[in-house]
Image (cartoon, rainbow, N blue to C red):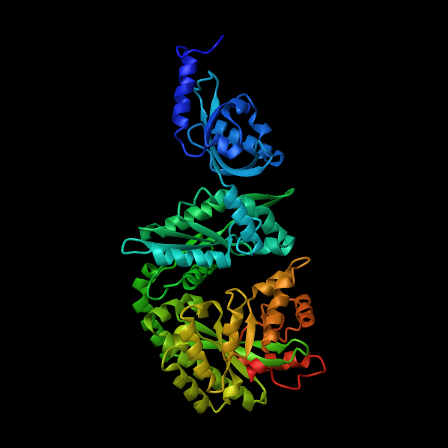
Length: 579
């Protein structure tokens, strides 16, 4: 019997159709077995099918065969929770002319359907062009092929744009660093573990990403988020939400991988954190603090330090005056001979109440308060004096390295502090090596380079620390008066897994050699790592394989013990980066 407009079922279908037809994209009413009852919107434009051709067809028949089961599981989700629509999911369909197209789909159960049976309303958005752009970005290294998220360079670019156009008097930018806690998993299974679970991680993340938010892979097992927010007090709650959302078990074949993330936050822009690199660095530091404290989140921003800054400044002044600050030293060895050629000075604060403090616990406040300048002066003076003592004990060829920030090197007094420390201690300037991290140098790059080149005129050596994570242009490296590249410790961590990917490490060592600079690896913990580094031509190494950082009183004995176990051949000339 023909349908008439007096038929209640027909009227109900037309009413639903008229509502769905006003929605953007493809809309459809589908029975729970997958039969398409009605479809409209941009149906023909997206699929090539007219309504008359697709009515009564099963949805599975137009889905790509590899995506049919995933679509079925979305229907199951809709049936289990009829109160809300499913989260967006991406599937492939096969159009009428055989072309594969991508659609992003959501659906919701309609219990009182015009068909008289439970049905599902479906909304689909054609994302074919977006996916093709993604494919091109994957090929260009801008998008991670496993998660579909931006890689670090693209994330930095998007964050830069967000800072430039999203911050105003009522809004600031929130950067969230999520450490998934997969270090041990990567050691056990290798990078494939992260590759296997990242698509699942991404699916869970979608529930927390809002319009305008951006996300990216910062490094294996580490994800960055950036968003424009209006209420700074929500930062910690946001961090806990991210941690709770991502916590859980993930499948890697037949194995279950447990993820228990820690989260760090930085907010800006501010006077001390006005650019993408600095905000990302502060969020990373916050995540490190969270990891050490075994807590799910740390808010690491201006507000969190405002109350304690004056107190910390006063305590630091007292620490310098009362001798609470100390330098510990970690040996740097020649990779071929294992002979100690230098020591790196590492600042420690022996607090009378809190015990030994790591620099991460106080350097942020020192930067904010301006105490970082006199603190740097103390470090370079003490390092030079300790080196002089060691030279008097017979270690005449030894060099000393110390870490500094752009804030310090760009201070007009810093060069004079270096000269005074050298003159007072009596050590040769070429025995002193200053290190700056590559990431920190991204801010005010022209000013930093000019300051470093001016300091190099004193005869000290300058090394780029944590090299390989900030994509510094080769032309910039060529123009700088630097002596060596100290590779980020992640390159050594990669060597801990079975069948490590040596490509990135080879590229970093080759970059150093091409620029006539020495390459140094840090974080060396095993003989196997050392063997690989030796084969790749990495001249200098540093890590717990040789020694942890030790107080000055133990340095001489540590060097003697390490030199006693070195190979017979000693280097005939000092390393370029160390003098």
